[in-house]
Length: 455
Picture: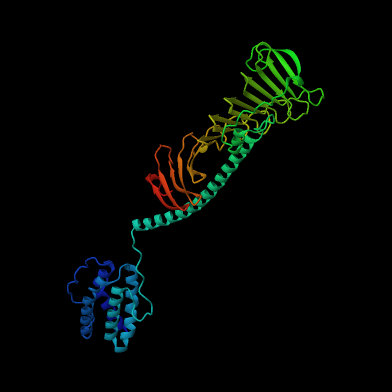
């Protein structure tokens, strides 16, 4: 037994140079040449042949680490060598001491070179992942971009829903404004003529001035009155002839007409349109033509609508829509067409919605969406077929009064969808991000500012 252990020790000492080479080799790099032949120490003369054979095997195995799989380190090789040596000694002991020494040396060298212990039933240690940091960083960046794309798709869906809701809101608001503008537009004094009927058929045409019904003067009561300066606007002191008509004989006239006492010019008319005993309409005339009309719609004695006329057509109209005593809707006409609408939606005294028209077609909508007194969204329209559709929306997302988000829309088969979205993220006036949409879905994003990657 002592002889066996001695031989194993001799073989281990002889293999030290080989183990050193295997431990330092790590792949395809050049491996130093074989260690110069040196006679191994002998325990006695008998096992010399076995030792020489083991040395020859060691010199042969010394080249094997060149083909060893990458990623096996020193600890793996040393552990495999020890296990291989013990396994080889046990197997070789069947042939005596020399066989034990030869088996120990052979399996030790094999295990050190390959990192695998023969007959152990286990696979060689898996090579370690040696991908460099740059490759890992790129993969992490790709994963982050994929996640960001998913988040952007969610934001895009939310934006689409917001846009659809906004379009519906604008349509409802404009329909409401049109209905309010038509309400009270028609005077009960005279039947509709062709021009009046045309104006009512097209709410964006300028309404015609209402005509006064011709009545015989004999049915009016005549009275001379003095009107102080300022009582009728900018008029000076006036001496007028007032003609009153009390058709129901309740003591409250339904109509009073005023004429200049010197020239006979028709100056003013006051009416009780609903016959409740209280005046609710005041008309002003210049050279016999209606130039201004004030209407009390809620019976509180104060005008809720003021209309101005020129050449027989309305030029402006101001309305107190919620009857709180403050006018909050303003309409402007040029020629025979509506050109401008202005609205104070929250009754704070500031205009927060402006609609502009060209040739009776809606061209632009300006909004103060956050009601801070500054406009922050501008919408442009085009006519596609018979429809007015959104073509471009500009938004101020930073609150500095300048647009920094620009959206372009396309209309196909009467469906309006977002086609492109441009964003100036840092407020320098230059587009930083451009998003391209197809059928309302995000398909590509271009980022011009590298500081914004990833978003």
